[in-house]
Image (cartoon, rainbow, N blue to C red; front, top):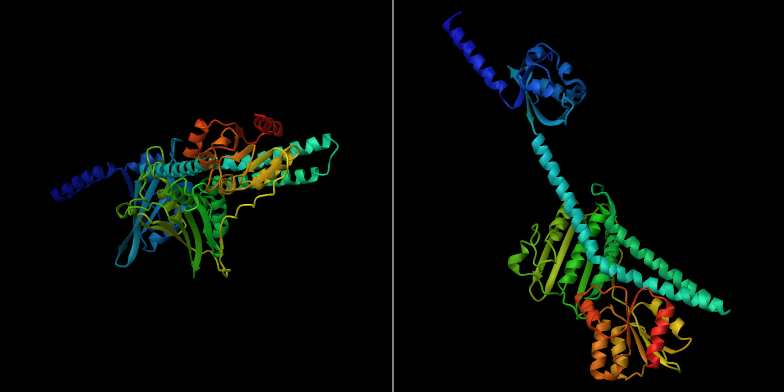
Length: 512
């Protein structure tokens, strides 16, 4: 052996030693798919010594992986380099590895002689990516639960209203049956059924936010989802603002119903938080949809405090928030932006301090639909004052007509009953018209003018009515409502309540 040959063999041995220490599999397979070289990593990954691989067909090594890799092998033999990922079972029965494989064709003078295989372990990267995905799913679930928790007080209030009506109607019906007077029972039962269906509808609306496979995509009706979202959020925001809608029958987008509802509810709640309490008549949240060709735009606007210009570029960042401590962790808008982007859309904001904000979502339409004329809607006007009867007089103030009618039926057996369905109408009747009453049975949580507002305004002008109030509540979920209940000196009825309880309280006040 010549000196040059000896040097070449030593260099080859050194190179082989270096290749054996690589934290990756490196091998060469000829056109007959026979192994001509393999480093020591194959022993670690497949439990096969590289010497045993020499001259063996690649199928012997890959086993059940061979059919999966065959298209890449055939492409490499055509001179097309391949890069792909694969899960590789652990020969010792442990957790599988994740690999990135690179097949590099060996082409000489236009002829493919084989290909080099370089396989890199990407298990750590895959595990990190999966950890990130798990964290994202948890954050989305946490944000959804946060929204549901925010809505919980309002939902409890809205469910307790129809439940109170159901209880009152059923109590009335049972009493009439026991007295042998069944004429009004059908009406009472019909209203109880109507209230029960309404409570069911409230629960169903909450299911929209709670359900849904995050990975599932289907055509989602934008206007219907927006209406459901407004219905959910309105249980909270209607005590801060009036909601107006102008929906353009814009059709569907490809997405997930619960995720789209999560975005809408989050923006609606944010709009409500941007508006001060006590100005519900002046505060407004505008919800609009329009379609321009194959793009659908949803806008949620408020006339609140607005966002300073220097903060507008940051509000979609994770954990950025302008709320007080305990008011939020700053994930709502970030997650909303991610959900919108996953549906192929984008979200943006326009805002001016002192004038309010407009959040716009633009999504690709899922199909064609001829737009119908848009319809603008606002909250209904208050029910007019009923003509008073004779006997001790009870004023019922509640924005829930079914409950007010149920209470009217129960109390009208013994009292004159006047029903008003707004706090503003109550103030006008008691302050401006000096309506004489013995008892004021007043709901606490009402839009625009709350029961607390009625109490405070009336007593300024008519202090003799102090001690004449009975408050009804299905849940005080605003700071003002909670503070009022802690300090007011008046009986409080928790909805739902029985008719015997309300009769006893009314009777006690009319005799005092």
